[in-house]
Image (tube, rainbow, N blue to C red; front, side, top):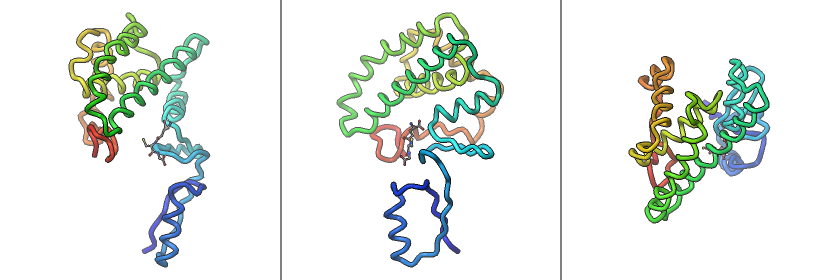
Length: 194
Ligand SMILES: N[C@@H](CCC(=O)N[C@@H](CS)C(=O)NCC(=O)O)C(=O)O
């Protein structure tokens, strides 16, 4: 039975695999993904082939009329989705480097200042906005796994997390085997890896 190689229309990481498959006379076919910017994750929705996690979230959100509407909402969404991505990268960065144990105390020391900004941004509102609620939940959740007491000083963020977890469909998903609670990072990470 032929193997199937799936990748984008680029040289990238698949070239060496192609060479080896040819060299070993292996029987294989290619699944051309047709992605503009091949990456993971990707979402295929009918004719749409989408990469970039925030573009995927935005697409799903717009399909369900959960998109921001006013100029103020658009700015709010843009700021918060980029902020959550920055904070996710900061956490991922320390988790992937060999000096993880050395850098962890500094991360933990700076974490309350970062969380304070989320707390002030949310203020008295029940939600951030649109799909940003799930991004904000995710970064807060990751930090709670990293430091379980990190939200103790921020009751509005704790309440926000409970509200997300209390949504009927989210609560059911979290109880299901489909909900992947870990590992958080890939094999080469120094913390919470495969
Ligand atoms: N900015 C991209 C980053 C995607 C990314 O770095 N994906 C990682 C997995 S988390 C990957 O392995 N990409 C496949 C690749 O680089 O070939 C996004 O938000 O989707």
